[in-house]
Each structure stands twice: as C-alpha cells, then as structure tokens.
Length: 271
Image (cartoon, rainbow, N blue to C red; front, side, top):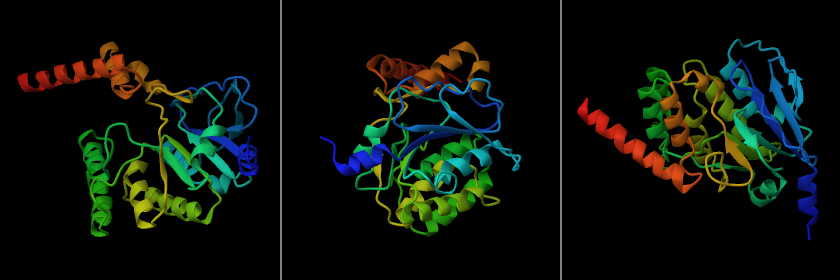
C-alpha cells in the first residue's frame, strides 16, 4: 500500500535533460511513462520530440557547456513548480519511469546520485582532467588549492553527476546548487562539475545518498549511450571506450575491460 507521501512524490516529479550544441541526439522516452513530465531544454531544432516537452532556449552565453550546466545545476530556477527532479545527461536512455527511485532515495535526504564508476576522489579526478586535457591545468590547480586549504579530505568520494535526483526547492539544495553554480561559472575555474560538488556537500554538511542504479551498471532504469562525437572514433578505439564505460553492466564487459587494460599496459611498457 502506498503512503500519502509516496503518492505526493509520484505526482510532483519532472525528468529533464539539457541539450546544447550538436552534441547528442535526443533519446526517445518509452511509451507508457505518463506519471512524470519530461522536459528537454535545448537550443537545437528538434523535428521529433520523442516524448519530451521541448523548451527552446537561445544560447546567449556562447558556451554549450556553460548553458548545459546552468540548467543541470539550477532546477529550482527553471522548474520551481515541481517538488522533485531527475536530471539525466542527454546520452542516457531512460528505460523505466523513475518515480520508484525518487521514493527509494529522497524520503529522508534531498539529493541522490550515482557513484563515479572509476574514481573516488576529487584530487585524483583533477589529475585525470589535467593529464587527459579535459581541463586547463592552472584552472584546476586554482580550485584544488582552494578545496585543499579548506581541509577537504582525500578519497571523500566522487559522484558521476550524469544522473541527479533532487528535492530541488528545499533550502538546503538551493544553497548547494547556487554555491555549485558560483564555482562552476567563476572565471578562471575549470568547467568540470565533478571537481566541486562533493567538496560542497562536505563543506555545507549536507546528507546525500549514492544510488545503486547508474547508467553504467545493469539495472532496469538507465542505459549509457556514447556521445555523438564517438562516431568519428576509429572502430577499435570506439569499442574499447564503450567497454570501459560499461564495464559494470555484466561479467562479459568486465572480462573484456580487464583484457583491454592488460594489453594497454603491455603496449605502454613496450613503447
């Protein structure tokens, strides 16, 4: 039997995504998901809405990354009429309506999200961002110096941030999201949102939950899809990237990932 609170949650959920630039193709919402609203903020011309309500946005910032993160981080500004939100990146396929997940995770905390599939520390994530060229070194170092001097511990944890469930109108979450946006949008700071959220959860002493379900593992809610630009990768590199990204979906993917890792290490030693 459903409680009154569960019924309230089910009737006050929005699932949303933000698609700016020619980065991904909008993924279809399966039929029968009538209990939630589905909203896509985008600057793209969408011929087929695929079950989403399309809200067209003029990209005045000139930055697709900045525009995406604005809607990702600030649902209390753009979706204040809803009590609960489930943000998903535009490359995540939703398989099942997520109201049971919201009930599962947001009854006693205001934010839940998946663990990072590979790392558990902002400091190691920052090193990866520099070495892979995903962020500018001096910008990363500026942020890392700030959080280290605040006393933020190593291996505190790391979320992937490609799925975020929130009770986004709560005072706690509004303060968290405004702080997150301040850091992310700050001039001279890295445009990598994973480098600041866990720090702010720690700094503001906000309780959160890690979700068991992610786009990377085997579950009935989410599936990972490679970004559109992956189509230009060499075939073998694309396969290796997909296997690495979905290593937790099943034992075959895990085995293939381990084999690829061994071969990669051998190649490095030879070179």
